[in-house]
Length: 82
Image (tube, rainbow, N blue to C red):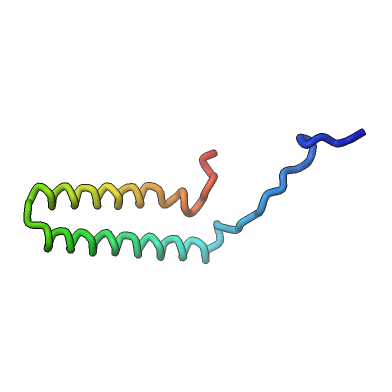
């Protein structure tokens, strides 16, 4: 009697992403991302003369920063919500 595919255990590559080293790496990447957002915001503030374009640019940067902050859990623990 042949075994079908469903009875076999799935082969998954286990990654130890919850280790403290991984968390420090992700938090380090998060700090770098926010530093880049701040630098881009300063550059936009200094170089853009039109106040409307400056405001829209800073708003877009702020939205990216909020998205980065909200999605940090997806990077630290991928696949937990599934």
